[in-house]
Length: 222
Ligand code: G3P
Image (cartoon, rainbow, N blue to C red; front, side, top):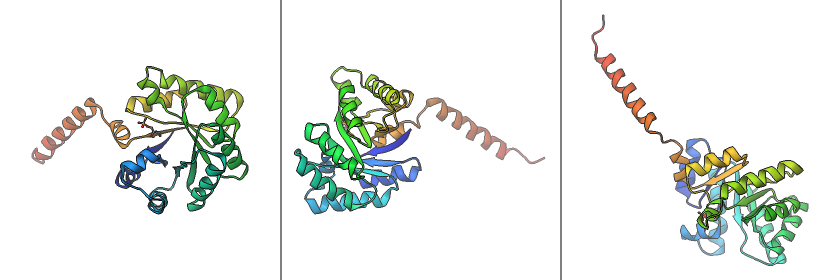
């Protein structure tokens, strides 16, 4: 399973890249706004800055909602850098645009997906990635991980090549559950990736190893 980081924060992207386990980045308009990135020129420059930190795919989301607007915006985003993947919302004109981008060889990430039916439309329209938001489903008492299982099962049954990019991940347990479900990618906040490191027995075991090593190094040489 690939790891993408779900942020527009350059220092967090660098930290994840330095860890050596990062395969790409996803952003959305809310994440860009959170970093204070506003104005078209600044937004476009920020995408290029992200591409220069990582070597994998970087999702950049359109804000148009009509077919011609999505196409024009998506083509402009895709022309910025070869790593850019155009993020398109799961709406009627978005599906039409996914099909158009697919026919032009422009890679896409279909976002705001909350049902298996929506994921079938995204695959049939030729999306490169589909982004089911599992945390937001959990928020309304629906089983987000179960949706990942469903989509993976459907895509494998029919041989759809769209990659399942589990999004809206909130915890290390979500990451593990997505891996069990067969997701192709998990896009996560840095905190969830770093929380995978944690286990109390690792800390206790390391403390003991270091204490024993110190005793050994302090014992007289025979
Ligand atoms: O990739 C989609 C993601 O950013 C949504 O996450 O935590 O806002 O539901 P969240």
